[in-house]
Amino acid sequence: MRVHLGSMRSLFLKIFLAFWLTAVLVELALVLAWSLEPEQVVQRWRSLTGDALAIYATSAAQIAEKEGPRPLAAYLDRLHSNYRIHAVLLDAEGNPLNGSVTAEERKLALSAQTTGSPELLIKSRQAIGAQRATGPSGKAYILVAELPRRSVGPFSGPFSRQARNWTIALLVSGLICYLLTRYLTGPVLRLRLAARHIAAGDLSARAPDKLGRRHDELGELVRDFNEMAFRIEELVRSQQQLIRDISHELRSPLARLTMALGLARDRQGAESHAALDRIEREAERLNEMIGRLLVLARIQAATAPPEKTPVSLATVVSDVAEDAEFEAQGRGCNVICTVKSDCVVMGSQDLLRSAVENVVRNALRYTVPHSAVEITLECNNGGPACILVRDHGPGIPEPELTKVFRPFYRVASARDRQSGGTGIGLAIAEGAMRLHGGSVKAANANGGGLEVTFSVPVKNGASG
Image 1 (cartoon, helix red, strand yellow):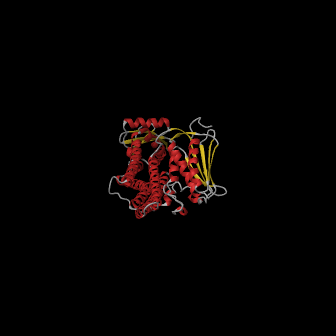
Image 2 (image 1 turned 60 degrees about the vertical axis):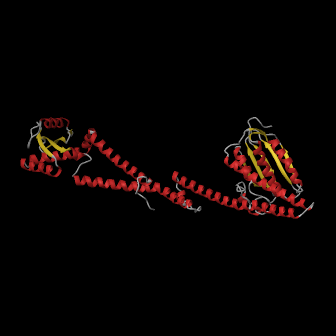
Image 3 (image 1 turned 180 degrees about the vertical axis):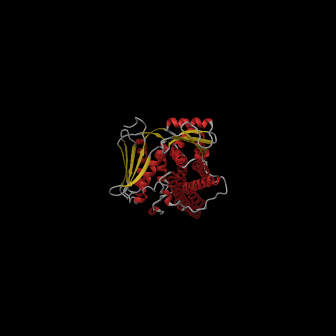
């Protein structure tokens, strides 16, 4: 995976530098906290150097009694050369056996003689420690040692060792920050590549599935992106199908109009009436189709009904059933309307009527001859109003039950001229229900046929 670091606008670079700078600042804060808190240094000295001072003091007392002043001086010189510790051994009265001490150091030594525990004094550049010890003869001694304060702080040791330690710390923190940044920005870069492919026209491009299996916000983003890409692909394909369908549906009536007009001009008298009637029917069909397209366009662009007034669903379904009965008689069918209870909803009567009418007309188109289309209205107490429209046709394959409400979608078997479907009516029904806060769904009925159920919220206290 390529990571572009050439610009400060890079998300990868911003996150990486933010993490790394945070790590460095935390380290500096710890160092400053250490350096600015003398009490912590004292406590650390007591825990780290108490035993060491006791060993140094005991060793010095033994050497002083057994070997004399010169071996004692050599031992103390080794402490200075090896550990940069300047030490002086005092007797029980505070008199130095080698070297000299200041009054402050003498006071600290007498305090250690009294308490028997290590005593420490922290100065700006050094620390002074005093420790009592007992020689082989039982005589008491006090070792006073001066140590640079740096030897107990975070900057202890030679400069080369400090530089090495800081370099290692920076490299390790930088590596950790790089890996963490790459882990966080990797999905974003993959999404960017997929988005570029989609922008270039490859609508099948998706982010890798393994990124979608992450259990965090980035995984959710990848899943949402892939779902969005899938919907876009479906929408574009639907629009492409729309162009083909509209071209076919509009071109055919116009072609027949042209032919009928030509025949009308060639004929005279009563023979021209049939051709003119055909022109009128095709014009009406074309006008109806265009009207549905306009209704669908308005519904898709709206977020709420254009008007909200109390609407009686009993009146809506009764009017639709009455009008549909005329069309049903032409096919030898009938419409059965059952109103179990009236329901009043707030919304647009025209949109609600259009929704029910489109589904009923669709049912009349596919129900078998000499059968009935059943319309049932029921309003449950405290629940939504339900309108059920059932036909006795062939039904719809199960995988396509949710797809038939998409604009211009038609079941493959219905894409013929004889069926007369355009894939607009059910989309209008779904859009109208959505604007009213309701829903519509289709299901294959027991015994054959299709059931379409509308569910729409009722006005409070308006059912009966």
